[in-house]
Image 1 (cartoon, rainbow, N blue to C red):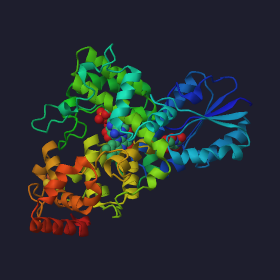
Image 2 (cartoon, rainbow, N blue to C red; image 1 turned 45 degrees about the vertical axis):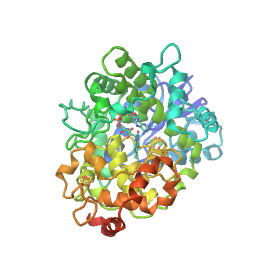
Image 3 (cartoon, rainbow, N blue to C red; image 1 turned 120 degrees about the horizontal axis):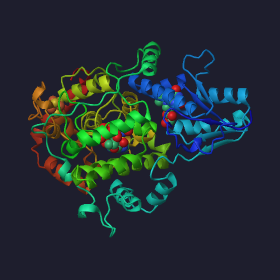
Image 4 (tube, rainbow, N blue to C red; image 1 turned 90 degrees about the horizontal axis):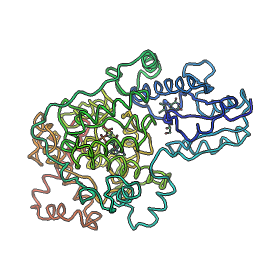
Length: 511
Ligand code: FAD
Ligand code: DLZ
Ligand code: SF4
């Protein structure tokens, strides 16, 4: 054939993708391949596999409708080799292209594999930069090299200024401050009616994929009932519009809250579409800034949301690519306990964990504070082994890819990087969960108690965590108030709390 073979991965579904630019429809072929290796390198939630494969099929059909030649390999094609490398080599053999064009993948394991493809294929393989982000990896490295500690807040301010987002003409942030987070931390009191989540009814392509997933991956975590993620760009754009119109006004105030039976609250539900490439981050940021400037939402809501997309999302990607592969192996707190079974079953008397695990099983979704302060906080306090916790997070969420999952879990939630990302561990007792949710009201444990059989496990584990890591944490001025509270506790009291923690840890499967 000559021309170029252009591989598009399952999370590279953007028409503007670097690897699709300057495409010659007469000579080039786009390769997209559903392969067992990508569906099973961890045992992804069924909804994640269905989402990726359905979105891939829709994207391939849209490309073909534009006149692009697409070689689409289905999972159940009898000749499917089972791996991306196998499919690239098979296509090179069949089509004899001059070169292979790839766009930088989102996971380190795949980039490592791709580096060997040139030799295996015997033709040049170009790996192009993935420029669907606002900060290139090169820019991130340059920025972080100039920082004593590469903290997100300073990165975010630099991004606001350089991209002119929520800025006044004189170079000052709109509203006179960079951060309005205080206004976004209201405790849960009375919840106003929550607008329903927009569900995209599965079309025939999605239904076919769902049946395939049930057949091939029936023993993977989670269920497919109620699958409603956008699988095309048009659906993703509509879902973003729906968020801006109906849920954005409540986003800021309720951002950190958790409520039984309300898995989605006022959240945007755009991470699956952003991470697949159906939406691009600057579109989402422009929609948020536009809603504020039109007077539709308060500044605190717009700023809080933009900080997540322009700040956190870009920052964690920079951390991932500048620190891998060593990052994943760090274990600063020497955590080594196995993951308890209730992370999969939800069978625990701790109502907060039961609610979050069950909603994750049903929807492949939990919002930020549930991920950080319920499952993440428990894993931190109980000293669960980072590798097992990371794998759980990569499996259970529909939006999980290692570039975004790993820094959030390893760095933010587990503090396994020793404080590179978070200035202090996000360790909290049951009091935090009680303030931000209604979970404790329906719990078998007493959130006011730290010692004794019926005491909330988060409380004893919290004090035990502080005592266990006291020397390390003492070096951190932000831990001062918590450590002072620990130090002024009567020794008997601390002894009975730590005895309760030991009981919880010893019988963790039954807590
Ligand atoms: P909203 O709350 O409405 O936020 C809007 C958008 O901001 C999100 O869609 C997302 O793109 C971005 N965002 C918000 N926080 C972060 C963050 N910390 N890092 C990166 N982007 C952010 N996000 C993922 O996309 N994939 C993951 O695998 C993932 N794992 C996480 C694990 C832990 C322990 C924690 C604390 C956070 C994790 N996040 C992850 C970030 C965040 O929880 C999700 O992006 C968010 O819950 C997705 O739901 P939403 O679209 O309704 O987000
Ligand atoms: C997540 C995923 C799944 C489940 N399946 C495929 C697939 O069959 N083919 C493919 O090209 N990509 C898939 N993906 C997305 C990749 O795993 C993703 O591109 C890498 O993890 C890099 O982010
Ligand atoms: Fe969770 Fe403790 Fe509250 Fe129960 S009492 S819901 S375990 S924080």
